[in-house]
Picture (cartoon, rainbow, N blue to C red):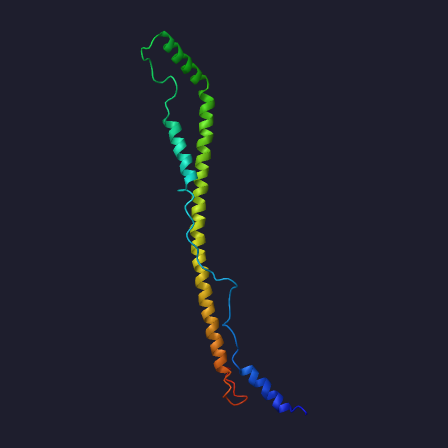
Length: 163
């Protein structure tokens, strides 16, 4: 049972021209689906709560600002003492309010930046999905063209080239 070289060549040539069995080529391991848009950080509950608390803090009436109510000497002394205390701690409270205001503005800036990054991420996800679909379709067309060029009914040595 000797091997005939011409038969061996014919078998290899037939196997090479046979269309591959299996799925079409895959470009990615996982499909590049576009996810849901990320929720806005700036409009989120945490940032909104900071702004609400800040607004309530500024809307609060400082002690001693009601003025005289005609309730007597004891009430007038208490109001005056509260006004003096408030005046002596005013610079520290103002400094604290400035720092808190700066922190709130920084949180707003970071939240706005995160929202921008989220929007860009959504756009990039859509772009990657489009590129994957187009590239997969192109690979499928190339594979079909290669299979068509390797037609087993063509005579041996009759390959078409554009040279």
